[in-house]
Length: 363
Image (cartoon, rainbow, N blue to C red; front, side):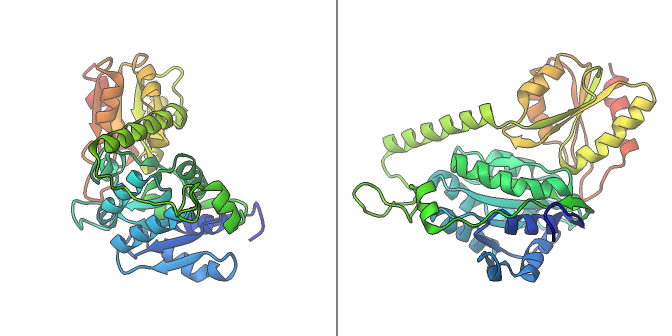
């Protein structure tokens, strides 16, 4: 593939190719629909022969996340991918990574639940991703792609944010974006770091050395309560910095909007068509698409909430992001939810009808 070449591929395939090009040191995963093409593409590409990247099908999702933990502890760019039930199994390991302040990338191509649910797409892992499904007070950086291009672009971005803040990052996709085919330009090749570069960039890692020249200890365990509280205060200060500096979102036709739709990922693509239908009827609707689900763009939503007459939270779930929207607006404007569950994907005209019935007519 030539640099800058326009290619046609699935979102899952784009993730795999981007990982190779972004200098990923290791992928550890386990097959599950609808994300299995990530592992399958890596197996076909054989990057261990070209870049030295390790690709391993682990025995389970639990093993996968612990391998990512180990790679992150060594200062390596390591990642895993799964779908909703598999990500649920990884939550303990993700919490351990957050507690030990380790970088690593987790890709979640969501499917419907609860439990094993369905193999059809959903967005019902919003709480699991943004609230942290493991124990303790921690956050994961969460990016929500809405295109195959963003699936590719967010791999390098996730690694950069993860290492900058020594915190796990997640690409929260779904079965629509993972399986759909679109044009994409893959990122340029970034060489894997040498061992000396890893030690220099990650002095905290197990490959580094502290002043006494003893190995660094990587752990989330602290038996002294006072020290554990100080560690938690340090984490909260870091999360506050991330909230201040790393919020990302997209606003579409919001300048003159009287009503607002908030939607992320594949739902935002559907909402964009609903926006066109509304505008054709003379209804001034805008769209805000959160790109980072954590940190959430609450300030941007609060500002728009003071401008519009009502907000529709459109999610392919029972209503999870709506809680964050209501917290952001603090009652300044009515906020209602529309979504479908069980793997049913709503049509744009359903969103238009919901906006009219839940927001406009009530107003």
